[in-house]
Image (cartoon, rainbow, N blue to C red; front, top):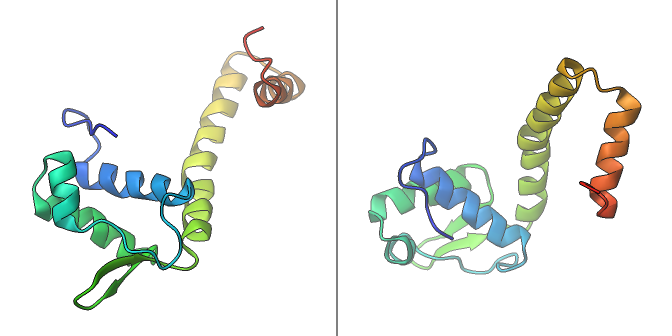
Amino acid sequence: MILNMDGTKPIYLQISEWLEREILNGNFESDQKIYSQYQLAEMFTINPATAAKGLTLLVEENILYKKRGLGMFVASNAKEIITNKRKDQTLKRLVVEIVMEAERLDVSKEELIQMIRNVKTGEAGK
């Protein structure tokens, strides 16, 4: 992953979202040790405090947990927490935007649903 240093999204959020994707993709399993703030800092050439802030955010959301003296580990229900969070935040926001744009363009509900079906079957843009 390449961080967007010039973007509007803070680097620590980009780090936490990247770690969430790694967990969702199965690159980190439940109770598996995750990168330390220093490893993340070295990987992305960032300040360790910035990396720590991204890790702390995931601890606060119960996606990661700390073992004193051993590091950070993936919570047993991390995938479920991430999935629910993304459905509730990201997906709902995107759906609202799509529905509003469809209304502006006078696209019917049926036409919008068909567009979604086409994307799912790989026929979008054909």
